[in-house]
Length: 342
Picture 1 (cartoon, rainbow, N blue to C red):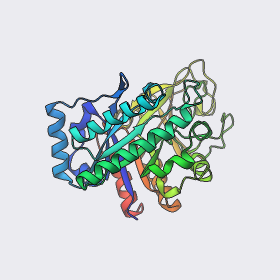
Picture 2 (picture 1 turned 180 degrees about the vertical axis):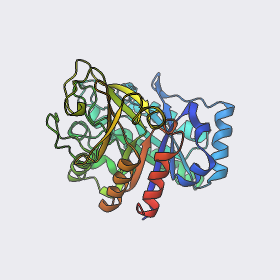
Picture 3 (picture 1 turned 60 degrees about the horizontal axis):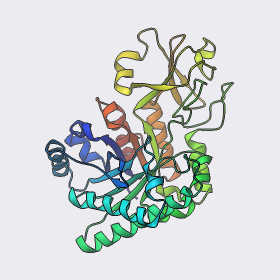
């Protein structure tokens, strides 16, 4: 099968997707349409609509989806807590699909159950099911295929808080967020690594390989899973100068670090930073004696995509387009998926 290559772009950054890139992507997710008053809300201005029209001219086969929610959103659970709320939410999302002639929905309910409400596990499934039902009904009316995807958390916690083993039937594929795996942490370490590191101090099993495996073991077909590439970084400060900072305890939790473009132009082996490579984890990192930065580079990106091909995965995706101005990681994904890394 042809591999999916999906990307996320912020609404303010649509103009950064070039015609050449549009021709290479299979799916582009517009991030985000948040929940407001129980409805999915997104207003595209004339400039944004013109940019979408440009991308469609460049690649008429490109599927452009509305991505609902986002990492900081807490509206899905509240909106779907009643049958009436579920209907109101899904109907409003379909209205956006029709209004802007989009190609489907990427449901970005990343943290079901984060509120402590156990019922959200079942609301999550009901939301997928109702979206799929409404998209199929719309397809019968228009004769057009509509896609249904999701951004899924990576780890046991997501499997415990969802019925993804059942609810994947409503999805065309899953964007498994094989990044952010060491966040909200005072341990400086990899956040987007392919394999487990053997460095001392690693707090838990959290690699992309592990999180893909447990999702498959839970019952999700591997061909429905896309591996994730981070176009951004996480950083830790006040890191002890031991083992180049890897898996050292810090007084502060991580924060978002520079984009890949900034790393490439300003940080790699500059400003006192040295670039290191963890051969076991197959992941790069930067350290200057005090600040630790974890990220994906072309080598780790290529290895991730080669792994996806070897394992028969559905393809790869990335967050977020705006952070790779030079199209370095973007082109690495495309070339590896289509040329097998050759």
